[in-house]
Length: 428
Image 1: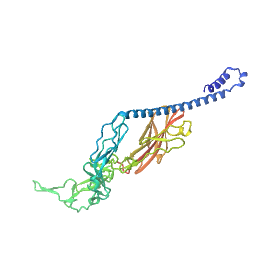
Image 2 (image 1 turned 90 degrees about the vertical axis):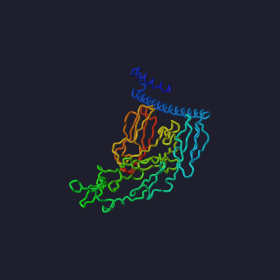
Image 3 (image 1 turned 180 degrees about the vertical axis):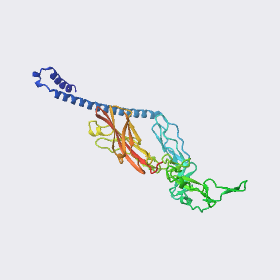
Image 4 (image 1 turned 60 degrees about the vertical axis):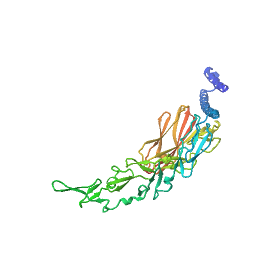
């Protein structure tokens, strides 16, 4: 390296010190400037490679330190004893750091809590202590007409499909829309004689007096539900004698205000059917089963899964072009969204806590439906994914984001964010 620097330095001195008649064997001024630029470019490239090599070495030392620490703690440290859940079993007897214990339930019961718990370095167990809950509440299929049974604490709830209502989805909605000649929708008024000898009549709440002298039901659904500004139910309205009732679609439960609908979190309540190895993602009105996977090895570049939603690149030769251009990490993100949300709307933020270079660049590199997204910078180290157009559901949109780190315009590394947005068919 020193020999390489000496030659152009001597050439520059020759150009600057010798008289014009003696400078014929030296480099021209243009050649000296070109040589200097080449040296600067080479130094920047070597500096970037050295920084990347130091980062890889630091990561390997951290992994080695963690491994040695785990081996040292495994010999002496252990976690407290875990109880066997009633009506269930515990698989695994060791409670040393790093060991796992698995739980199963007997027939007729399902597990609520953590199926697997790991003894951590701080001698505590991961997850929550599970228990076995009876599944008999829904075992008899109490919900009729295609209703979905939701098992609760000592009770169950039926989520009724459109057109059905009742505690067991046993009543068709249209049964409430009977003619006004039905006795439940028209009734005799309440009348009394006053002191002047005249007769005064009135109707119960929810009824109104007609010319015939009968009290007739007020159809609140017909009066208010047809307009968005006056609607009394966020979803469907059912007219009742003297009143009304709001109903929610499948995947929602009626809120305590009896007008709005709350999304049911099937993932937290173990109401999903995701298979082993899949991850349950709660969305508005339902759930999705996903399986994030790392890219397959290619051109001496491979990835290892460091968490359920992230892959990191294994160390690879820095002189390989495939290694230099491959992403340092790939993360997976799943976002639930209601239909027709107002825009512009920030959906996702990306940033780095360890900033080595001198600049970060954010970009959209692909995905299905990425034309309705944009990327903007909120500060020096943070980029934002923006939804630019409202989307009517149901729909699934995918976008791939790239965050690249540079030092003097030389790429130090990049990170990929794969974002999938699940848009509900409802606006709530």
